[in-house]
Image (cartoon, rainbow, N blue to C red; front, side, top):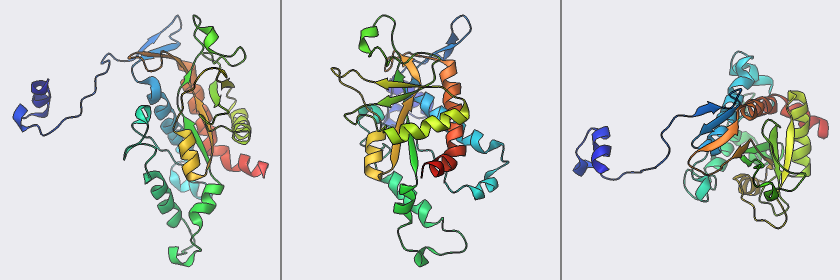
Length: 266
C-alpha cells in the first residue's frame, strides 16, 4: 500500500513522512431507473448537500451579473462546508470549531459601509447581525424504505420526488423550530418547491446534524433540511435526481428572498 502511495507521490516509500488514507467505492456515480430518475453513488451523504448549497449560491447571483448587484442586499450570502461530521465534528475543520464565529465576526467588522471605521462603531455588529440571520443546515434525510416502512411514522415517511425534507425532533437532535419552518415554507412557496416533513418515531433514537450545535453556539435561528435517500452510510448510496434540483431551487430562493420574508414576519 505504501509503495502505491509513494509511486503516486513520485517518491520512495521511505521518504513518506505520514499519510491519510480513506477507503471508498471508486466507481463513478451512475443514473438508474426507467427514466434515469435515480442516482447511485458513494458519499451522497453529504456531497448532495454540499453541491446543492454551493450551486444555489452561484445561481442566486448569476442573473445579477456579478456581486456588484448585491450592494442592495442587506444580507451576506454565506456557505460553510465542514469535515468530520460523521465522527462528531470535533476537529479544526469540523463544525464545532470556533473558526465559523471568527469568520463571521471579521465579516461584520469590515462591513460597516459608508466609510465608517471599525473603531467608530459600537462593537456589537456581530451580535446584531446574528439576530437578523437565518441558517439552513443541509444534510441528507432517510427516505421511507418499502421493505421497512415500520421504521417511520405513518404520516412522516419521506419519499422520493416529494420535495426537500424538513427534519423535526423535540429532543433538539434537529434545529428546526415552528418559526424557522414557517419562514422556509414561505420561501418554498416563492420557489414553487414542495416540502415534506419528517419527525422520528418517539420510541426510536435519532441521528443529528451540525445544525443544533451551530445554532446553539452562534445563537442563530436554524432549520434542518435534506434530500431523501436510501442506504445512508453505505459504501453505495441511493437518491433521486429531482430532489437535487428541488434543493438547488429552494436554496437559490432562500438567498434571494430571505430579507423580504423575514421583513414580512416582523
